[in-house]
Amino acid sequence: MPSPISKNKTSAITKKTAQAIIEKPSLEGVREIIQTAFPVGYDPDKLLENLRDDVFFRLKKRLSKGKHGVIVEGDDARQIRRAMFAYGTDTHLPLVESVGEIYRPMVIRNVREIEKEYDCKTPTEKMLAEIMVGAHTRILQYSRRLDQSTRLEGTNKDLVGYYSMMGKELDRAERHFFTALNTLKQIKSPMLEMNIHAKTAFIAQNQQINATPPQS
Image 1: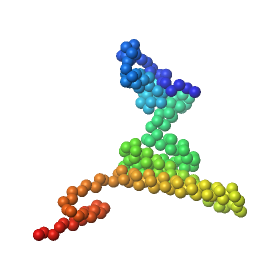
Image 2: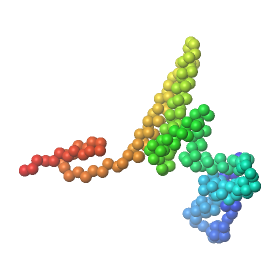
Image 3: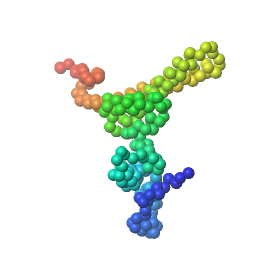
């Protein structure tokens, strides 16, 4: 199993860090050193730095010589893939690979459409869009399996148990979908501002009805 410590040139200990180690830093100082001087190989920023300084640098040299492009393979392809997973809420690669191949183009399209519909900008909003699409895809998958099973002739104890399990999973996927949808709607809904100068007020959606006491 490879070490999580990055082995590229960005792991070099600077003179400042070396001096801090020699001077026996405080516990807080030790934490700062391990956070900054020894970046793990899974740090997204370091992955991007490595792509820029090493992988893309090599690709640039190869592209300048090739007339019809180049094939990205081997370690370069693996590093690009790791970066795509690191920024999965933007590339949607982790979500795509969690579903069957036949659903993958639909998954990417649906996530993009939801992000456009609700103007998803933050990581939380994008994650909710992915949860919705993932749940929707599971609904389709479970429904398809149930349909295929009901076409079988006869029944038995195992098949009845399978129906029960698929039904529960279908219900769970539907709950996940509507929970994520409602949460996203709440996040994107404008805040309700109230300025009430009455003893009694009845508040409804997008309107305010005040009941003021009669004038004496």
